[in-house]
Amino acid sequence: MSSHYIQIMVSIDDHKQAEHIIKVLLEERLIACGQCLPGMSSYYRWQGKVCCDEEYLLLLKTQKQHLKAAEHMIKKHHRYDVPEIIVVDIVDGHNDYLNWIKDETT
Image 1 (cartoon, rainbow, N blue to C red):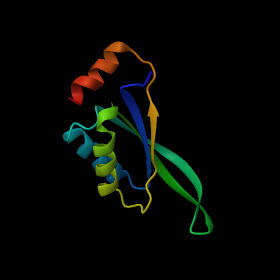
Image 2: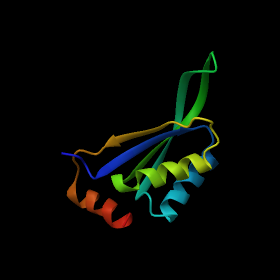
Image 3: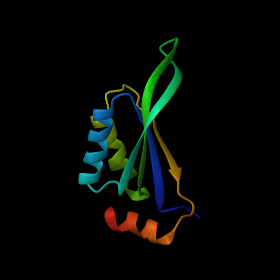
Image 4: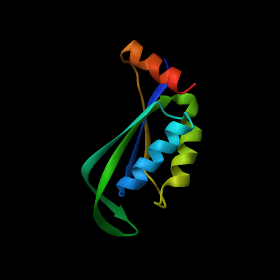
């Protein structure tokens, strides 16, 4: 059974840009809430080099039907060439919370 609700994870290196992305998504009703977790060290390969940067992790809750529009907005407002956008199904949760996500993104 497919979930109607998802969490989108996005990494980003600038706190002001993180806040901006969350606010744009909220204003467009593409997410019900977004959290910005600080202090993440990201290690990765990019253009043949091993890199390490301090980043923030965004956790964005929404309905699956908004994924493409949310992804478009994230890419539009994110400065990375290839932003991390990972989607996880919310397979279960508190019904009142899930209904709140639905209400805030409808």
